Image 1 (cartoon, one colour):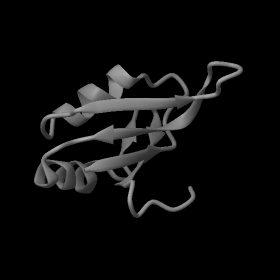
Image 2: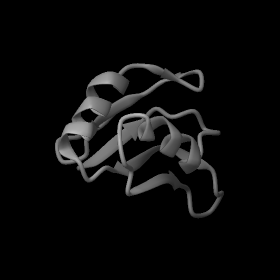
Image 3: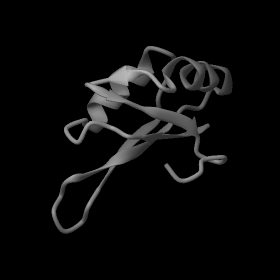
Image 4: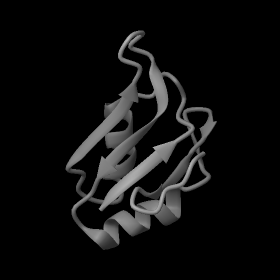
Length: 83
């Protein structure tokens, strides 16, 4: 399952997200999207978790929680809408 995460702290790294989501199960890939010109985070990213039940548990538990001083939005990337 591909997971969309938004409203990240600008200093959040892919490694930070890997650690957060690994608590719920195996994480295939993590990507924090950055501006190609400035290299600064666009404050959103994507996580891929192969096990749907683990991914759904992460969605349920992490949506609207505080992570690194920011309330994050966590959704299935297939159903994500603008934030």
